[in-house]
Length: 278
Image 1 (tube, helix red, strand yellow):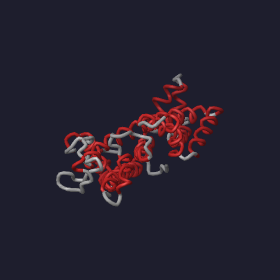
Image 2 (cartoon, one colour):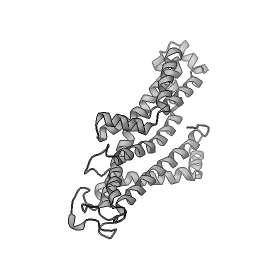
Image 3 (cartoon, one colour):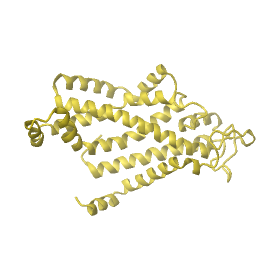
């Protein structure tokens, strides 16, 4: 497939294009937060407390007089950073286990499938909540908890793809030439399953962000005065009637971020592997 045909498919995929525009917009805001935000996210000015949206404070202020717009902008860094770290950890765990189960089969496959199905059957947010409760509230513990309970989807897909590939003629030829299993897995099998892995990564990222903000809302993630979107939402609940903008704008940021990544994931699935069903 040449570059022109790939470009044509990309431009014909409106879902993917809209998602990429939203993704790069959020990424730009996160990278240039220092330039985009008009105020420091933790500056307290009680004289400006609970101000509605205006020219000086585009999204209004909270009960401490902090700029909501600046806090939402800096919060995008936390959301993207945590989401990316979570997805990297869970994808590494899932891909490694999926490759081992699909390639070797036997008792190892049965054991990994059992653990995967057990993990898959448990509500991830409830399990993450239990783990964070045991470890203690912090952003690092949230990352660990979400990654530990969210790798099963990677393992299931990678295992199925590995089983379909491991008996192909070129794999048999590699074995006949004396290549070790580690080399076969890295040189021949892994490159041929990168497409579904990429799709899974783009679909897992919004889920990681949503789980992070959910735990932050419960007070188990980032701690004050960090501008975590879930934490800002939680702080604004008590002021919904008097100052609804405290919760509305971080809520909109969460929706747009999750929607953007989901559109990218769905569009990428259509481009790379239309038959993949996550």
